[in-house]
Image (cartoon, one colour):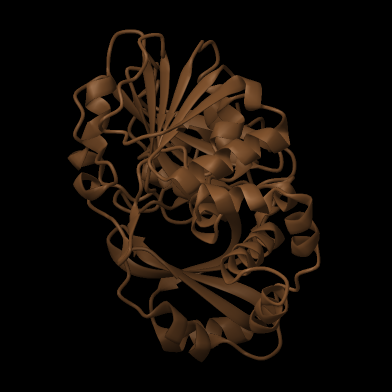
Length: 401
């Protein structure tokens, strides 16, 4: 989408057309639009109408913002970008490299004046339009340029870098093929400059092309792992951190302190599955130490405790029974407990969970969960009810910050 089209989308004529588009009727809507505007404008108006119908899932004012479909899919949720922007508190000039349509820029601009750069002129135009919607135009200078050829101003003391991770043939998994590659950030490093790099959640930390110091933050929102952020030269007290965002706030777990060896025990009355951010950040044992839980196997990211503990860092199930894995025996146990729909989860098990769930489920009864895993090295089934949601801390255990 070019800047001229973006400029037209901001006109009253275009906005009135967009407000009347039925996004559930693609072909009919496009046909109606082409009767009054060009095909190019019709396609752009329909796409923006579709985007605005979905953008409120990420932005409270998404029905007034400007994105392409692809850009909206790639944009961080506002809760995530706001959390990240707060990490730049105290900065005086932030550079947003590969700013796209400005989803992250909207949060960064509330922290400090920004310079935003992207090689796509249409996306730069959309970023400027979004800044106008939020009343932040005076806080940002937008530039259309190649990030590899552009020199950061000397007074930039913070950089947010979000390289492209999609090509015409799909997702890019090799960081050397990112657009531009992660190594680009090495040229921007200097004392006193903090750099945050948004990476795919599953990036292999062992292959990061950076010399120390750097830290890794894994961020989840409402239980879904959203991103991994690599912080270069940030002078942080931790090397790995799990950040969990939910309706109750922001919860932080890190490796500032090394926990003692965590014991492994048979499943107790309650079973815990750590949040994906905790697992990806390598902090399962830190969580166990924090809430006083034990592990059920040294190689498996499951925890157990005699009590139902309040923690935002894990989901909790009540254990009904634990048995060596046998489908026949499982079926008998579930029938005895009046099980209906059965969900099967696994770690360290070769079983096809979807197929097993279909075989075990009944049309009526109590929803139950079967966890297939290893306990002391043995293939085991843990039959559970839940997840449960303890609203208050139990026995003094509290896992938030």
